[in-house]
Image 1 (cartoon, rainbow, N blue to C red):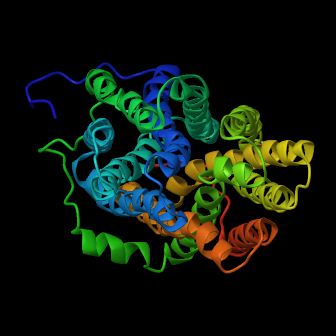
Image 2 (cartoon, one colour):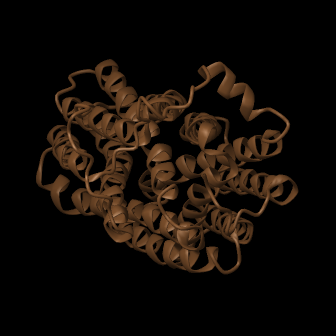
Length: 409
């Protein structure tokens, strides 16, 4: 990205590293959060069928799966910083262009590119930060990095509640996509602020081809961790995208007006912040496995309660608890995953685990319209998500190793 003769940036302090990386994370979350509201607006504007809405949500995850694996592999070869900035620019530019889409096919192609950038940026950013923080506070800092996700969702909900209603349905979602392109400007700032971690020519160790790195993930020292992480990522991403992308639509189906559903999602989004903060407090005291297991079990119970809610109060309380536990678990997941691999294959390991998880993100948004067409009630669909999460918990309990305090090369 920068010429060999240019000086490296001054190393960032922990708080500034967290802020610089977290702000990019915030914009990523804003885009994903806006998609949930854009789907509801596009359904009205373009008369989309439930199947078309499901594919529009899933194409994003297809791009994320490809981006997570490809950019994760590339980050082990050229350094995390270069990939971090490249992926941020890719998803920002594609987001801006999507505001001018005139057909579903064009919009889906751009959503794929947005997903590729987003899918590559998230695991690379968490790896970048985790490698620059001391072991005794690494878990807490990475969970706090993930907490910027809640702020991005909060901005998305505010845009949906205050900005989108000011425009006609065919214009409102386009305005939201333009606002999602703001990170392109921020990427230029990131280029100057992040420490350059590209291997120097005179010290660089040979990087094995990507096929060898993939084989190393399944070699004897790492096989157990890889199996556990792939299962965990799949179950968490499947349930998250299946539930959260459809929250506004589920609320409309339960009888709430569209704008009123935005208000309720806004309240639920606020519940994500204490979920992150409590997980950040616990993760260095009780360990990674404890936080993952307890918060995922809380997510499963909340999903069941949300699907069976029969009143406005019950729906709101279940949604708040769902946000609290699920996003706290996400923070622990991003802190835990890089700690399972050595530096030479760390970004590859995190990226492939995230890529497998994104396969769940493809199936999750498709599950609700498909199962609904088969006659499944909302309660049964959310019970399926709850069972899926419990399977992920079993994987952590049986295969997961505690990594609290582990020194990372």
